[in-house]
Amino acid sequence: MRTRRLRLTSLALSAVSLLAVSLAGCSNGSGSGDRNVSLRMTVWSNDKSQTALFDSIAADYRKTHPDIASITFDYIPIDNYTTALTTQIAGSNPPDMAWVLERDAPDFVSSGALTDLTPTLKKAAGYQYDDLAPAATKLWKQGGDLYAYPFSTSPFGMFYNKDLLARAGVTKTPDQLVADHQWTWQNAEKMAAQVAAHTDKQGLVIRDWDYKTWIQLAGMWRGWGADAWSADGKTCQFDSPQMQQAMTFLHDAIFTDKALPGPGETADFFAGESALTITQISRATLLASHPFNWGIVPLPAGPAGASQVIGQAGIGVMTKGSHKQQAADFLAYFTDAANSAKLARYFPPARNSQLTTATLAKANPMFTPQQLQSVVIDGIKTGSVLPSHQNSAKIANLVQNALDPMWKSGANVGSVLAGVCKAIAPALTQ
Image (tube, rainbow, N blue to C red; front, side):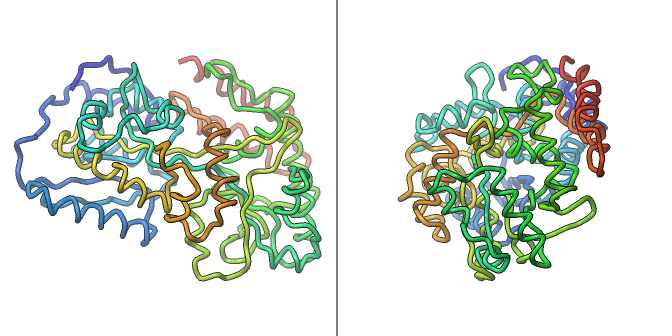
């Protein structure tokens, strides 16, 4: 393992100090001569179809690797995933491999928590390392070396319930508005408000936000040209005019037009409880039973134009793991061209050769080629990744707490956003 400077980060507020100390004393041994090796990867998906695919890839790998006794995928709920993972790393039970959220990439890559995958991937037979898209790997690199494989580079799209829109008297679907170059946030909000006013269902749900995970709002505010902080990560931009306009629009949509469920209200689009939802294509498995007629389109355009947003996740090998080389070798197999094509059913690939409608259609039969092109391929080409920063856990909590006063009728949007910047400015420069 190449020695790298270890730097204290906020991977998880309670575990980071222990993590840095434990990494400083980690062994450089790869365990490459071990037998009866058990490998474990932490994941945040417990979708049965996804985990069955993981298990089948692992079973195929073990057929030609008798030294690997077992490969398990350890589910951790997304709500406390990073905290639980970093606690394991800092303690006596580190995983061999782990999924890592894009928002935590700067911390994991810079802290020494992950091993350099470059040598293993480049030498793996038939891996085609140069096929990995530079834009997809950028977040996971340091000094030209790759510390996690971006197994999922997934743009957000807008799913819609055709049946519910028709029941509410909506005359133009999102697809028709896209064709007419009228697919805007203003028109999407009007559509959602009409559903809420004329049915017993909700309009628009920003999935996984729930007035807590504020990062999910990036898909909306970037349509106004707003972002959480500057490109170098040093300056807060929550108090910018663009962000104030975007958040005022959202606040009015919630509390004036009732286009979104209010605080404490829930609605599951995939159960038919709302007309629109923002999420990624992997959620489409929830529509396999065809509960209603549905479609999907790119995110709407705002005053600054169309702006697509990408959620990304990487797989890394832990430096503190007992079987680093075996873990890296399995990761090379798990993410090679053949298995990347299989995983593309749920996780859009990082390989240039596989970002075609023909390849994606084989893995995603629920979508039309046009949907895959406009939402996935074009989204990856033109979109930007969700906000990420060092000290991500600390900053996320500070933003969430500072935004809490926003979620009530009559809130002073400008004052709240100024308070966000006051709260996080010191953390941005640590």
